[in-house]
Image 1: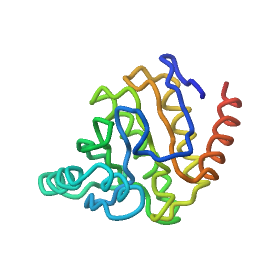
Image 2: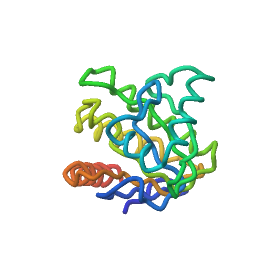
Image 3: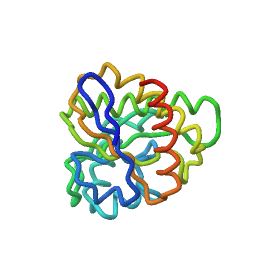
Image 4: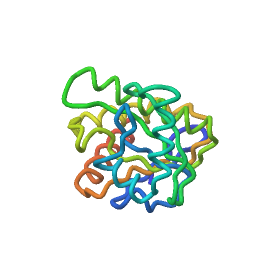
Length: 184
């Protein structure tokens, strides 16, 4: 566990099922139409029940598709969390996708503050079925967290990066610890 910022935010890395974490909110790696069929989105939707997809469909009907880097919020259905924050991450290995992942994380933090979220679990957005390179995810998200949270005074107290793939989790944790130490 690492703490960052004036009002410290704990950063934790967990190998496991994101839907079973004891937190206020879960982040979902979504597509623009919030159709939760595969990957982590499918798991969250299946375990959370039909309410999540129903609320997602209503959101898109009311506001239109979610732009890349944007965040939409629904309830968490049958999950123990209160909210699901659906973010549209990068697709594929394109340089402009680095800006999208940065925007995702800034918007996740801002939306968490708006909702008074204290604890949140986040998957490795875009690195699964959407094909964004793990290395670039790790580099960009580390940069955002270290720079954005150093002066952060919002509601978040704990961010858990969670995936069932231990390789991803361990690689991110090692990189993050090394960079955090360099900035410390």
